[in-house]
Image (cartoon, rainbow, N blue to C red):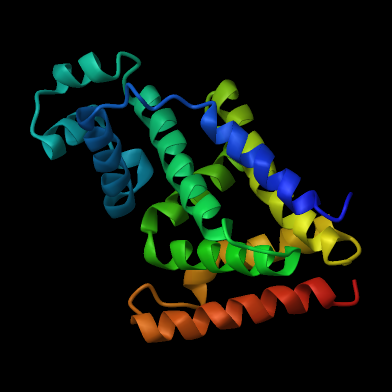
Length: 215
């Protein structure tokens, strides 16, 4: 990779986000998607039905189909896309002013870690992806999209690691991502802002330790 490969990875990620047209994603559809995520976080993914979603947004169940003709499967797919789209926007904003691969890496880790701790839907998304890998619960087309999103995200980490001169970047990045996705195992979602800032600094240090480890 070139010395600016992290910029190329960032641009590829940004272009993919731009391909999604959310212009038709009106307030009602977004409200339904957010309600689904909240219900899935509170009660478990499998417990969420069209009826419980309808109750949450105060409409009759048949009316949901006017927004999502494909029913629950379409809501699940769109909620995953919507979550990743918002994550992607936040990620691009976080790395926008990075002047080097090192700064780029730190910005990515900080954003990734804080969202894992503060946003329960991040853990739900990871759970759905992990469950699908074991049990194939997602439609094949959506699975391919999810795999593509995961690869685009991890490629940004890999590119930065390569630009910083670390060998075996892909292996090291997988370990770092696993560490960050398990953030709530060692960082309480109830922590205050000062504690979160300290834990985020620790996450950056740990990620760099993994990069420099003797594999």
